[in-house]
Image 1 (spheres, one colour):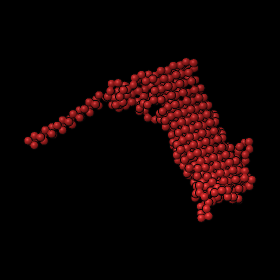
Image 2 (cartoon, helix red, strand yellow):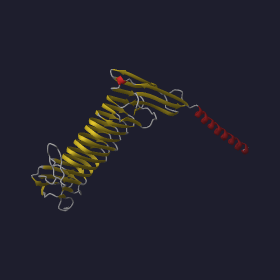
Image 3 (cartoon, one colour):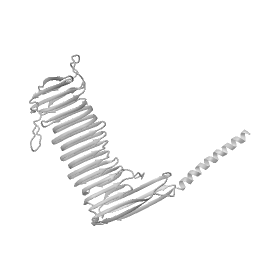
Image 4 (cartoon, helix red, strand yellow):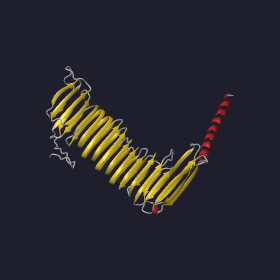
Length: 406
């Protein structure tokens, strides 16, 4: 009896294995692929202004021939129903309108092996008045990171709004650029003063001429080299921010750990409000306000500053001032009380002969010369404050230049 039970069990196991293999084979055999493709050329009379509103991902590429747009789709699944789209191109009043609409949706997102859809605009080397790209939606379209290559086009007004991840290359003459994306990278060089807004990118490298720059949401690296005195506003969670070149005003707000470096060769006002990290400021800095909850601050100004405020109780504070500064009025608002039992907890170390005056409680005041430069430092318990001579001769003149002593 046991022998028959063993034989019967073996037959059932082999039958189940065979059935499973057959089911897998049937599943593979029943995979169906749907493909779609459309290509439409754009009229030259409508290329001054181009508007794209797409339900699928958008890419922009250069071409040596006439301008055209193409749509491609490949969908592989076990179900019969597929998502379908329609490409429409219309020219009117010196403008081209490119639309990709979804004409059929999926009820169930199961059994899908491949879902690739893409709208690509091919542009020749030319100047545009406006290029507007809208690409929003919650579609898993499996194309990977996108590339928008605008290195061969001068565009007065560029608008890109997408919730996709993409890499954008921009090199030319622009007046206004507004880009919102979800992750990705931007490499931009502007040949004319441009008003720039960026939101959502992970990494940005900006060079050339800028009038205004507003950046939100950079999480890794923001690197700016401005050739003209620019006004810059930055708001981000964490990451590295590096500014080098010519600036009029810099305002940075961070919420996490930040590595901030600003170097301006024109007269500049700097305001920084961040969590923890490192701040290094250099150049023609006239008004400076830094709030850092933890970390190190180094300031090296090549002009006589009007006011410096260091707030938040940061760590090491190192201020390097010009050797012809006429006066210093330093207020040290330490987070401890100076007591006779701890005479060496805190020191102000200076190349200038400072007159020490006890104001009240934990506040100390130090004076030099005519006290024309006001400095307020809110510091921690064990961190000394350094007020050092940087060996520069400073000038605040109409040309806003700083001259280094050789």
